[in-house]
Length: 192
Image (cartoon, rainbow, N blue to C red; front, top):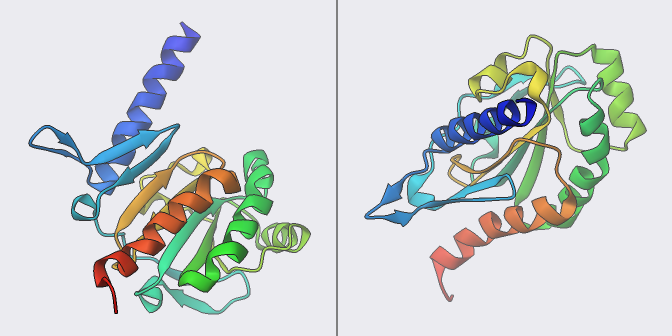
């Protein structure tokens, strides 16, 4: 019985994530893939990201529209979340490995205390910014229940949701997904 509930919950989460990224089948061809919990959609099947504005942990304002033209990895996390602790190094390592390719990262800290969130970032040497969202308003815009973090979204250069991962990530999972999205503009531009 417990396994059936888990499978039903996992399928429901996948359906919600697929709906959020706007994935569908066209003429019987699958336009999105779900490989080991990583949902990726073709560019013409992506939905636009909800508005993302807020105050960073250091108190400065942030507006995601300022990052338009870059690939943006958005990670929802909390200092109280053990899987978030497990993935922190992998996120930072992926950020360092891809930032030279027009990729930026944004953390969104939910259900947390600012001092604990800042201490988490210092402890794990996180160098990319995080929005402080203690009421989880941004998480709800992305259809993430506050108690279901971590969750990671990869946004393409047009601000559309290309990839959804609703669990802790490793660098080996995330970096190839980010690199695929980052390479899309180069592929569309063609040879010089």
